[in-house]
Figure 1: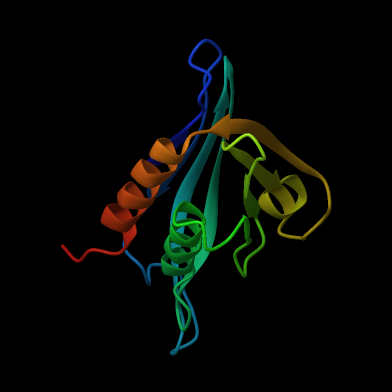
Figure 2 (figure 1 turned 135 degrees about the vertical axis):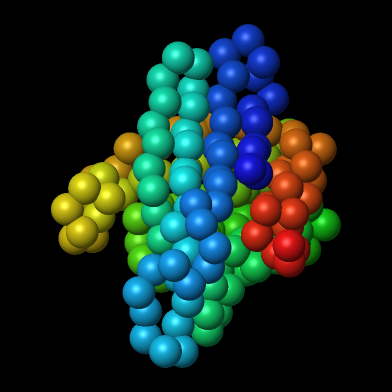
Length: 148
């Protein structure tokens, strides 16, 4: 499981992404592969958990997330926006002027519950450190990019 934790330890927040089965478990066209992932958002005592789909072929969206987050960690980007082709969640990471990283994660309530994309969403926003971001990137790579 890949987890990104807030810098605030008193009222901790986190974003966790975990594989739910191997790629290709979702019925798809012959040239496509999809994977279910569990997305967990936590802020203090509040939590939100959702199963989402990400594309693994023809474009590996999780590899793209690792690359984008790596660009942010290496200061090649100031902001990243990650929204899978199946738009059930959105992740925004942005460098702050103070040197931290602002994290926003939104679950599209309409798409998650009804199958239709809508603008309504539930989510979290927190600040994290560069060290936490690097741990998250490493865990994402181990979870989704290494072969068993």
